Length: 126
Length: 234
Image (tube, rainbow over all chains, first blue to last red; front, side, top):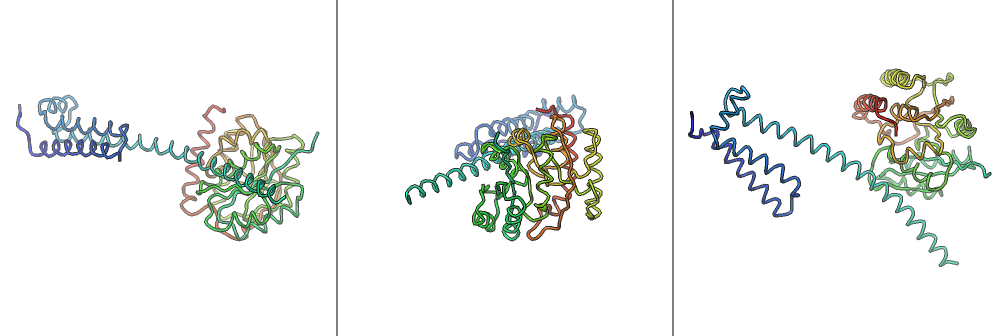
């Protein structure tokens, strides 16, 4: 059983830890909402754990029939990236619908406001 | 009973050149009809020229697409108690002289959506090849979906009853409101009808349909048509 970390695993795990810290820092600076940070923290922690704990990674790799532990880590990373992109597309679509509704609402309200202002101006003139 | 109130809805995006003539033509052809211009985030003086023409103007602060402009127009029409809404292009392609003919079947209660068709009778209209392929394709899609031939599925010269506008003020395709819209309306039980009209070349300004949109159009409308077929009509 390999117990010592390969260079690739060290790099992966180190990168994952850095990413986690960066994500948390973004939340601290109010650049990223807690909602989105959760997914990133879970994903980067998962990568970190996989990268560090060699026996577990080897076991998963065997169980999935993957050649090479590094591929397992990449596969998980890729799966996460795809899931995140789909999730963001959904969010973006919803934001688009909402934006759309708000824009139309604003247009109608502004028209009514102009009408009201015109009406008042008319009264004053009289 | 008071006579039915009709609103001509003119969606306009950067149409300062052709809009005044279009509005004047509608007034000349059908002086009894009210007009609403929905300025869809124009960067030019579209709103200004429309206001100067003395019509109601609702202005989207950003560009949302022709369908969204119509949706706003329907909502306005419903809120202001109109019985019928007509969609008319700002660029002068839709000849206002056909307004009475277009309105007649809806006014008489014979149908809920009246479509101005270039193909019901020989109108001398000949589209470029890519358009013709699309027209034949979407004619087939609509026929398949609702079991009825609509000769001009891409016509944007249409009149809608109040009940249609009530539905469409909330739910309307935000771009390219063509075949999927007709399928959705037919599945909701609305009656469609076609009236022969003649269409002209646009007088000025640029079309909504840029090259990118021409490529996106068939994808979007095929997918949306399929969805309109399998979606439960609400």
